[in-house]
Length: 367
Ligand SMILES: Cc1cc2nc3c(=O)[nH]c(=O)nc-3n(C[C@H](O)[C@H](O)[C@H](O)COP(=O)(O)OP(=O)(O)OC[C@H]3O[C@@H](n4cnc5c(N)ncnc54)[C@H](O)[C@@H]3O)c2cc1C
Image (tube, rainbow, N blue to C red; front, top):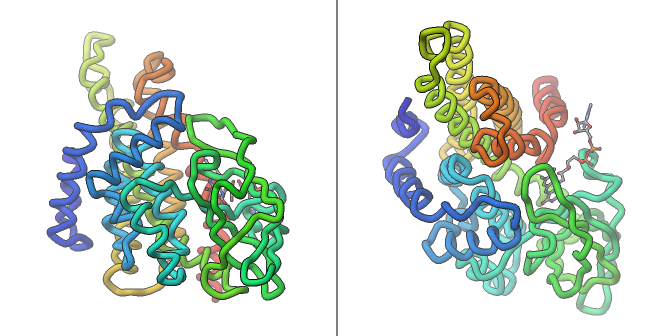
């Protein structure tokens, strides 16, 4: 199955097809080093390389093209999960500045983020506020012309290696977004998860902060940011799933058993058929969502929730089937499929767990 055949779908323009080939060439040449346990070092290098070669500008564009971000994520994730992660965090972390920052804030951060010279982070979740984001308890107070933020943020991607954090905290007016520089937070409590990922709990004690957008508009801003990036999580899931299918097809064709190839056995064929169909269905939802936002210029609350849920759940099932087809090799440390099995898991939890996506879809249906 040609991984690039879907770029002639009507959801895409010609530049998307051309770009996807360029990203593939770049990924093949540059991501050999992007696996391993030193996630901090890998991400720092990938961010620099992605910036130097011009890819990050798509993640921090003034008018983000969701199809472009999703397809870049799909291809990077196919080759290296950390590369996808490093790419998208530059966008997710600086998104509130793109959407609502002052000209001075944009000038101070966005060119550096796009060049890979500054690493961004998005700090919304707290120990007692994950799925229930509105329950955050971090506070922000005016101190003369500046603001001060107190609180604890956790599960913060790029925590410990970021140069700045966009932090959400409650001001008198309601939840608001702030830029806080790395030097003003304590990100020393690092978190290890199932697959290498730079992450920390971030403590703010009277941290100097700059308001982004209007006070009280932070929740809306976070949701508008997620409206861009949620669909692209589905893109990353597609990349993981397609890689698992490639690995499974390769092994099924090579592996001999019972006087035939593993691929000749109908139970294997059924698995492969389910995997490929699941991927195509998820891809249709993903790029439909991206197209609605890019071309029809509409909010994609329902479409993005469907795409994110379907693609991440499908990717998990596809990767599990790939592990099964590979047998012992599928659980051998360092094998691409074993790596995918660990890398995909968090996608069903972050940027809204599957249950949260179901709540969103049902709410839209029952409106
Ligand atoms: C790898 C990774 C990276 C992350 N990066 C960031 C980041 O950069 N910035 C940031 O702010 N946060 C980040 N997060 C945090 C992430 O957004 C939260 O983990 C997520 O929102 C879930 O919150 P929680 O972990 O507190 O789980 P909880 O809120 O405790 O939820 C636990 C489970 O409850 C279930 N659930 C939720 N809602 C419902 C419902 N309505 N009905 C039934 N069941 C439900 C779901 O299965 C959910 O997984 C990251 C998390 C991970 C794992």
